[in-house]
Length: 458
Ligand code: ARG
Image (cartoon, rainbow, N blue to C red; front, top):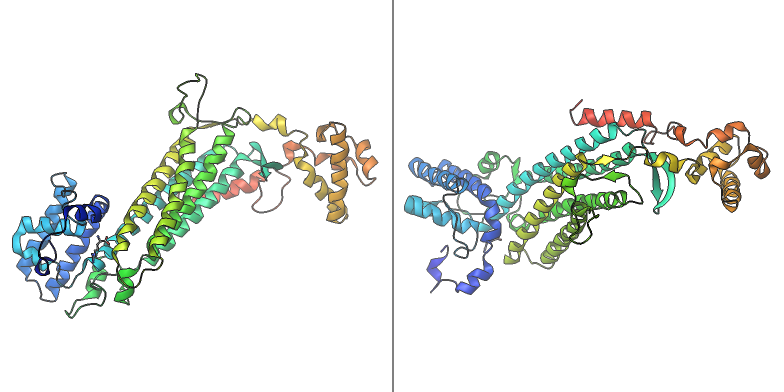
């Protein structure tokens, strides 16, 4: 019991059960111990704890850490309000009354803020590592598919031919933005909350610079009131996880479409597919569907917690305890989704020739024909109209570009000559692209080189 003096009895057991977050914030145990060791060292530095007491406190905290890691001690659920009380109580059991000195000048309000920040920084790093892995695996696939033609879509209607490598590299760009977002969150967590107390600092001469440096921060936070009520970084993190999951969900949707017999572009490994209990022929892309499904929960976590925050007066309110469930859930969901997606893609096979026949003569080269007219000096709007008539005429005869003749083109406009037919050749369509960022295989290969350099692999 952390506040015995003023109370006549303990918390009602149902109330304790209702209010305990221990089964969730047990995730913070290592950060809690790390923060407590730094705090104890600081108390010794300013003379509020003797060197002997410091040794006793630190040894006790290290013992709790190893007991936890070796599965030798686990706080009894529903006996404590949170991990902070559970660790302190264990410390009393292990070292006796000296444990009572640890909380000097500290409140659980600055303690929990510190634990959460230390945990979130580590979580950012874990996610960044997983994102780099998925980028690497996408590039490995992309390097053997720079010439693999697939249709590119807008409005899910065939638009222009692209390559599979180009499509996959679009996701590598998205993953890079996900990394940048997490890096931003990591960098924003450069100030230490420790020493803010409950909300208004301390009359004790706490050395906040000492704990800040010890725990790897650049500075102590500048306003105690803000410090104990700030959970913006959790919202940033939940948002980062949501956008990342949204990217994985879009990818999942594409994988699901690509694995249909109609598309037949991707063959997922049997190890990452499931069967039907009824239909013997079925092979289902459940992993992709689950990632797509789980993304909803990630978005919900953001909405849930920003709703909790809205309307809270400064500073700490117990409502803030509700930050942990969404935080941990979004992290574990996103991390697991990234890692399983990486494995699933690494083991998948792509049908390299699926679209060569299919795209031959396809109208998705219509823009190329319009560009040809532009190079002859026709204003683009007119060129668009002329090619529109070319397409309409062919469609009426149930033909496509493979059935086109120069005579036919000339019936639409006299300007056409033999060279115009060349730009309807699907096999050279990609290499005719000139612009940086286009699916031209030479440009895509350069981009792969760029990513390989960036990710430090050759
Ligand atoms: N379990 C609490 C939380 O996570 C710790 C801080 C409690 N502070 C308090 N004044 N009751 O928010």
